[in-house]
Image (cartoon, rainbow over all chains, first blue to last red; front, side):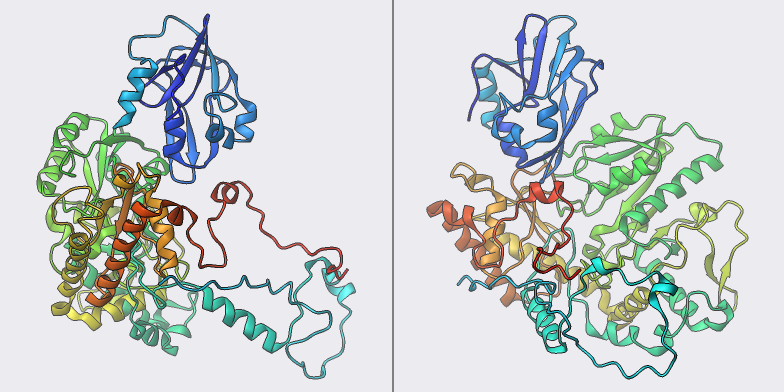
Length: 125
Length: 493
């Protein structure tokens, strides 16, 4: 399973990449593999204020519809329009072209986020 | 052995040849009419196929040969009760006395039809333990919605409009939260505990003063009977809520136990599952509902009720009624089929349905235990939920096992439902299958599980025996336009 070392992770299988006060958010390789072929992304509007832990949107695959949770608090500054049009990018490149949203963080990433090692252990069982 | 590959058939449009006809119409004995002037002409862009009678016959006969249904093989699709629909139902429903009546003809000219509906209501009341039945809802989810509308009308009639939440277990059919949302409720999810039952502590915690009711499937979608059902109903009632039973799994209870006795206030039935009216493309559905007398004032109208002398009558002066939920009383000829089925079994025969359904599911679960363990290790009801998790390490998923079954000529069971079971395979054999069929199925499943360990690629590539292999499901969801378009050469315009 692909778990890049430079990202932070949630128990609900989102990843977050923090660059200054901008956080890029997506779902993990494990999550996309469990979901199967993804057909639709329901993402928040730019400008929406997110609280850590709240549902930011949902992902529909041929198998199921699954909620995506905000790993951190902040304001949505950008959504991945290309992935919205081609959701298969989330399957093929979950950490790259398949990113979901960018958020301007209001406050720090809190203690619930895991590093790659901890996430790998968490999602192994 | 896997079955042989069938060549892909051509579309009837592709078999078309300009000017070829399937029948010779007699010479017109009325004056010719100018189509251009009266109808604005004939739409040339339709490119309707032109074939002979024999072309047509072969086309549809060949298509029927690649179809799969309960009449060609075992169909263990969990949660769907794909039981055999006895042909006596069709014989009875084809009676000209039923097929020759019109929905709009005066009600006093169809006493026989009203008697059929009244008898279905009477028997379903007895089978479910409810005081009232209405046959108006047209399908299962429509029945769910109608029950929720009754619950809402009941609360409002008591001046209680603060209840805005419906509780739904995390194992529920997706239609439950959808029906609640359509009825204007928000949904609060209730966890399932380690035994596969409703988590009573989670339920208690969720039972706040805003709860209008609980939607509970019993037996649950895990195929397990809820042992605390009476306690659950008591708790919800104590908190002022109502309890709806999702009757999708009624096949496990027919003739042996009654939801009305468990404490439920209302339920829906799928006549097209439990009472053997056609199902799965053969529809239409039939979502009769049952309810206790305190919900009676709100019944959809008109209400069909027997007079003191037993004559069925339609009552329309119902000031508290939620109104009509469909134009007529469900799908009338389906009610006829259900009545034929119920009467053919008779009161003494009905328990056979649920007993054999439960026995068959437990037999399959026990025979597959070594290769596909049950998600919850306890006796099941009419269906068993197994997990294929152990094959995941080798790259084989539940879906691959199901796809491989097609190569052995068997319809796949339900996959990935309920959502709380990893790599779920849900098998519902129904009571209409014999031991030989179940044994053949189990042996195929065991073989496939051995293949999963020795030859994962075989399963990943399955099915290879059909006119199509793995479909591109993602594209099928996104690209909905499947209309045939002629190439330039084929274009007749």
